[in-house]
Image 1 (tube, rainbow, N blue to C red):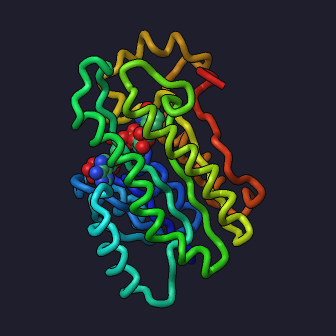
Image 2 (image 1 turned 135 degrees about the vertical axis):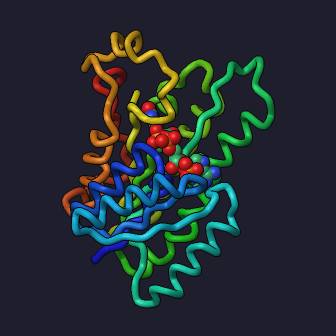
Length: 242
Ligand SMILES: NC(=O)c1ccc[n+]([C@@H]2O[C@H](COP(=O)([O-])OP(=O)(O)OC[C@H]3O[C@@H](n4cnc5c(N)ncnc54)[C@H](OP(=O)(O)O)[C@@H]3O)[C@@H](O)[C@H]2O)c1
């Protein structure tokens, strides 16, 4: 059974990805940082459906914390490796650049972009040694188009897109694919304060996406059937921007 780690499994999109990966037969590591209640709920749902998984906690901005948590997992699973990594944990701190504090900038870069490094660098060697892997990075429309009020977040997500394309070329000979999915507006905690009624008028599909919409795409990219797709950024935004 393949092991899949979903960072931010306690969140809206991450939770849906955990459940769909479990349905597809993966042993899922549901990651959380602060919200153990939500992560546990997702794990219970997996188990109630007959799947298997476990919880894992770390703050993705802390390199040592990430490494230590994975070291514990590796010691408990000496003959296994995590072959699917979903880099989904993320945060935003929306503010116009003229008002942006240094911490607004650094906290968003630390979580999204440095977080990508901290976890990916910890798992990529095992994928290379085992000659099979999937890395799927959850980026955003903001990282492609740029959105006002999100200079920090757009920069972080655009940075991950660059990393996706570079890393894909480094590891594709080892049967490891690296792709990004770029959601538009998805109904989760992150978008709860947005005016959905107004914004959906801009979306050709006339609705916000659901976490399940994103999970379907991620599960496809995690499987064997996507082996010739790498270095791609796939939009999932109801036609808002292509
Ligand atoms: N919702 C959208 O419309 C949308 C659109 C485009 C892209 N995205 C991207 O989709 C991903 C998931 O977002 P979501 O909408 O599902 O948001 P969400 O429900 O707020 O979930 C965010 C997740 O990130 C985790 N996280 C935040 N800071 C962390 C840290 N320092 N260390 C470890 N984990 C951390 C949270 O963990 P805890 O709660 O346990 O602390 C939570 O599981 C993000 O990368 C986001 O940028 C979302």
